[in-house]
Image 1 (tube, rainbow, N blue to C red):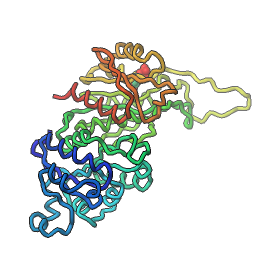
Image 2 (cartoon, rainbow, N blue to C red):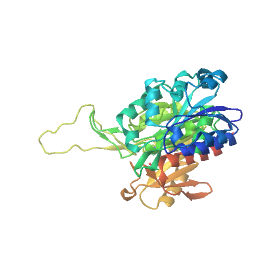
Image 3 (cartoon, rainbow, N blue to C red):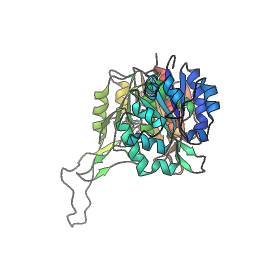
Image 4 (cartoon, helix red, strand yellow):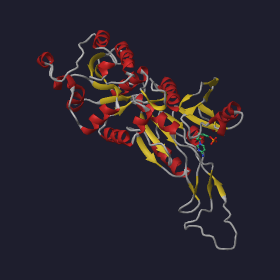
Length: 398
Ligand code: C5P
């Protein structure tokens, strides 16, 4: 997948630096070569000796290194690679990148390069969530920096949440996608996500508890495999991923129109929690109490079923995947839903309040295909997304 590709790997200072050793191995296994750069903090966690031995390359550490300048200057070093990868990318390194600082070799290379940069952040959950870090991420996304991870989970510091560096295998996939070598390169995938809002009047609406987290994670995972993603999203709590085409919508009917306009596609993944009904007698003006004590009577009309329409309509994508949020008899209901809607796969999950799945960070899904039901262990929504994206790639690649 990375045959002949040259990766300049910047290893920052964090406990996740040990995973950079595995990353070097996997890049080489995929056919790429690694030129390692170790920050001063990075060298506190992994030694230049182990990095250099694995990479079979000289390890670059200092900005003012005369031998290195004679052999290859830092400008050339930053440009002779096909891609710069920062793993782990610490909060400090991200701040330096966002601020355009160049006070050591790593930050200078990142500023001097004319190549794309992929970063794999790793830090304590509070540092990740801090407004300063989030601000820096926004700046970097705007600069076109690519991200992989972080994952959610237990951290070395004992806390739990987002901040763990993505697994080396996921970083290699993201490298492939960044270099245009992912298995979904050239494929178009439409993803729907989030809830829909169905107006009662101009200020009130009917909605549901979908956060859009699973849909956003899926769009990111498909993008990371090289797909061109059209992300049709209702008003979600989770922001859309970078580098996808975002089509924001409000109502189910808007979503249906946006999906129809986004076709043709190689695959459609309908992760949105679409309202089944809209208010048929919604008001153009704000409804007011008239003092009589009489509540307004809302009438409902059924919304279009986007999944069924796409599955049965003309220009059907090769693979159509639906979701089924159920609270009882998950597999039986979802299996029936697959038949009824005419889609290829259903990703079923139990959203009873006790599971904490709706609006939470984890998911426990059963994948229902023509050949039966496959129950996956409970895992982060990011991991569900990566697995599902890999399965989609298997189904439609080539
Ligand atoms: O029928 P139910 O809402 O349980 O089906 C869920 C699946 O159908 C999801 O994939 C959802 O995105 C899709 N759906 C849709 N249009 C609707 C209702 C659901 O595309 N009006």
